[in-house]
Length: 182
Image (cartoon, rainbow, N blue to C red; front, side, top):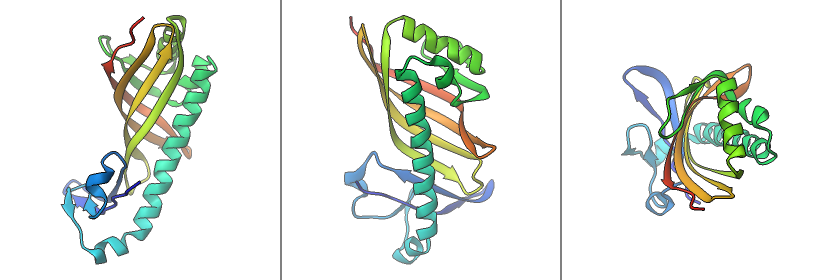
């Protein structure tokens, strides 16, 4: 596993932005890249970002742990507990459907999936980025839903918000790349 960590400033944000990308390890193996501005950074700059590295690894683990909680709840058939990973006013944007808002609508969607034969969900976190403010983060990854109709695979992008010390999914959008085939 190769890691790329960088620091950078955006014109509209004075916070230090950090990122971790595990999806392209062959390309990132021998160079350090600022993930905000996509430019090379010096060894000196990289060394000074060791604290940043620790922070982004902690963020990555926090988000991944929350995804594991989601998978455990979903795979146990507990749609309500799976929906609790979402912000109370969160959005879920499924393919070919209008956006759903709030935990109740998201829970109903999960119940519908389960009733339609989806038995297990596998979430693969590939990238997590955050801002030094420790309030918002985004995650990009892929997923597999296994069930009576076969396996559906896809990709997703989620925006997370930290409230009362807990990361919650604020917006969730996914794209089916391979539909399940019965």
